Each structure stands twice: as structure tokens, then as C-alpha cells.
Image (tube, rainbow, N blue to C red; front, side, top):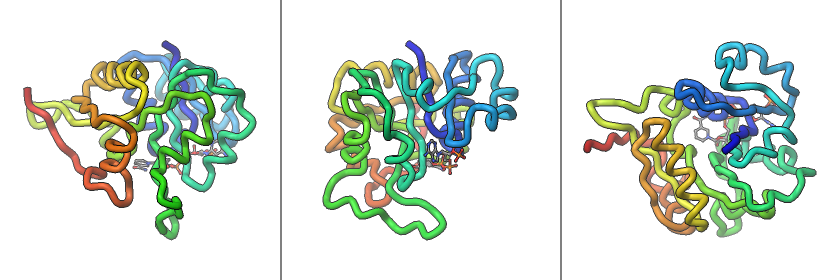
Length: 199
Ligand SMILES: NC(=O)c1ccc[n+]([C@@H]2O[C@H](COP(=O)([O-])OP(=O)(O)OC[C@H]3O[C@@H](n4cnc5c(N)ncnc54)[C@H](OP(=O)(O)O)[C@@H]3O)[C@@H](O)[C@H]2O)c1
């Protein structure tokens, strides 16, 4: 299963660090082009390589972590996702104002799903601060919890397996409607909680 990452900022690079620590390869992309990611790829060689957005989007599983207002530009012009898995790590709020985006009563992941036609979307990696995504998930004698949710059981199982392989305690919150509301930031009760599961 190949992995792509669109967005190489706090969350994209934290996810890349978690992958590299576990010897998992991925292609990472930003808006400015692969050559601007030389420092990150040198740190995470040989596992993480830089590519274009098109190259990262071709992977079997693609984590998207881009500021909310930039998502349409980042995802426009890509071919149909043809059943490939998208991990939605995005939240509908961004600096410098940190004013919640207008969602018109929808969940943010429902809006992201509309930007990646044909993808099987799983919401994950959006509720922890980036430094906890890249940190060792073994903590306090247990494993740091990472929630995920989605409507496609197989896609969710694949993301759940990756979360386990990274050393987190994955907790499946169910459908996007249920899990997406619980982990929605701002608004849901779960974001920013640093929880550890024992046993
Ligand atoms: N920061 C956190 O702790 C945290 C936690 C959970 C969830 N999130 C969510 O994760 C997402 C990313 O947040 P972040 O803090 O990682 O943001 P960030 O540090 O500002 O990084 C944003 C990344 O998106 C890229 N990008 C911007 N416009 C793009 C475009 N048109 N095409 C391709 N790439 C583009 C940027 O590339 P360039 O630098 O080349 O422009 C950069 O690599 C947001 O939705 C945020 O809500 C963040």
C-alpha cells in the first residue's frame, strides 16, 4: 500500500515523521514544489521522498493536511480518486484569526469529501496537536489514543491497521456522521485530548 501526503506543514510532517520512525515509505508534497522539502526529506531519508501534489495524490492512501481555506486550490485539477483512500486530517479553522469556517450545517469532512470525488474518506489525525502525532505514542505505560471514523468499512480497517502499526491505540468511532462530529474542531468534545489506552 503506497502512501502520499498533501501538505507538509505541522501535521503533514508530523505524520511523515511517524511513518519514517516505523520504516514506512511515503511521498510528501506542498504548494511550493518538491525542492523546497529537501531539509525534511534529508531528515526522514530514505523513507520519505518529496513529490508533486499529483504524485502524492496517486498513492493508495493519501493524508491531506492543508489549511482549510487552501483545500480547494490544493485539490483542484486532480484526477478522480477511483476508490483510493483519503485521510482527512483537516479542521475548519485557521490562523491568524482562528475564526471557525462557515460550514452551512455540514461536517467539515463532508465538505472535504466533496473535494475528492471517488475517494473513500476516513477522518483521522485531526484531533491531536502535531507534536503528539510525531511523538512516540507509547506513553504512561500505555499507547496514545488516535480516533478515526468513516463510512467505508474496508478503508477504515486499512487506516486502523496503519494507526496500530504506528504504535497508537486506534479507536473506531463509527460513521463519519458520528465520529466526525465527536472529533470536529472546533465544536466536538474530543479534539486536543491527549488520551492513553492501557491494555
Ligand atoms: N497544527 C496542528 O497541530 C493541527 C492538528 C490537527 C489538525 N490540523 C489541521 O491540519 C491541516 C494543516 O495544518 P498545519 O498546521 O499542518 O498547516 P501548516 O503548518 O500551515 O502547513 C500547511 C501545508 O499545506 C500546504 N499547502 C498550502 N496550500 C497548498 C496548496 N494550494 N497546495 C498544496 N499544498 C498546500 C503548505 O505548503 P507550502 O508551505 O508550500 O505553501 C504546507 O505544507 C489544517 O486543516 C489544520 O486544521 C492541524
